[in-house]
Each structure stands twice: as C-alpha cells, then as structure tokens.
Image (tube, rainbow, N blue to C red; front, side, top):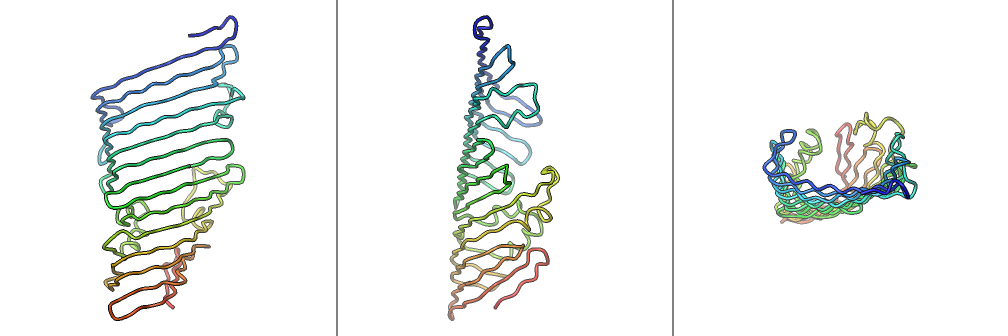
Length: 274
C-alpha cells in the first residue's frame, strides 16, 4: 500500500513459503518467511523493515539443522538514502536466531540461541547459548567500530573434542593431548584490539592473536595429559603477547598433589613446567 500523493509513504508486506526445495545445493524441507517494509517514495528512503521466518530440515553436505527460526528488525530515525554506499551505519538492527539439532559432521548441537544487535557504532553479540549433548557454552561479545576494541566473555562446560576442528590443525593437535572423562568448566574474559588494516585480509596468527588478552580459569575432573592420568585439575590462566601462562596449576593424583606453573608460547610451541 502507498500514499504517494500526501505523505509519499510506502508500506509493503511479503510472505513466502517453500516446500521440498533445493537452493544453492542446500535441501530445504519447509520454509516460511514474512517481511514488512516502510519507506518514503519521493526520497527513496527505507525506514523500517521487519523479518521473521522459520525453516525446517535444512541440509547441505555434512551440515544439517532440524529447525531454524529468526526474527529481526531494522530501524532508523535518519532515513538512510538507498543511493549511498553507507547503508548500514544509520540503522538500529536487532536479530534473534534459534536453531535445534544442528550438525557439521563432527559436532552435534542440541540447540543454539543468538541475540545480535547493531547500534552504531557498537556491534554486540548480546547472547550466544550453545547446548551440546553433554555440555553448554555461553558467550557475549561487545565491540566498538570506532575504537576497534572487542570485549568477550565465555563460560560453560563442554567437551573440547567437539570444537578442535574449528581452531586449526596445529591448535587441534596440541589440544588433543588433553583428555577428560567429563567436560571441563571453562570461564574466560578477553579483549582484542582490531588493527586498522583491511579486515577482509586479516590473518589470525599475524594480525589478531598477538593483540588478544585473556584471563580466566579451568576446573576439570579426571583425565590425562599425554598418558599421565590425574583425578582432578584446576588453574587460572592468562594470555598476552601470545604467551599462555597457568600460574597455579593444581593437579591431584592418587599418590598426592602437584602445584605447578605452566607456560606455553603459542608461536614456537615452547613450553615449560615450574
């Protein structure tokens, strides 16, 4: 609908339903999508947009999700012009995603919940909740695009083998030396200063890892490290300048307790116990 004579306002709604479709080699069981848009015809401005949808049974190769729902709103008070290249900056964007029974060939997730917002110049992952078959992960990320500063928090207990394939072959090989009978409890707070260079060409080892600072703690039950078993282990941790330090590693074995300091350089992989 529109009133181009008196107010130049335009209102549009769109509904879409797909069943048993194939899009970009992805198999879709069922998709329902609805969107509404409000804009100004004379100024060619898009002012408000809302998007809601629900997708059932999506699969492509090793990736699959039983159900995915999303709800998003896009608002602005400055009416960005569609002729400009800076379309994102004036918008206030809030987005919620919910997924159930997702797989990628290695990792199985019972559910994933995401709340994301963009209020210029701040981009926030207000909430990320992941439920594994035998663990949970909670995270939030706050970033300021003007200062390029990113703050993150992570907590939960989850099996490390579920994520090793996501962190690179070298890191995965190192992490696989640690094995636990039950998922360890991990709590981390970190900060990352993004560089000014082109973000499309960022390299983790060169541009990001040296700028990452983190502190937290790990508490674990029975497990082993390179075949050396233990009944329990706990430690604080600090990461700065690509140097990982466990300053108060406490390990309990049947014959007694160990109090150690552990350091590991993430570039050279040189490590020491003290």
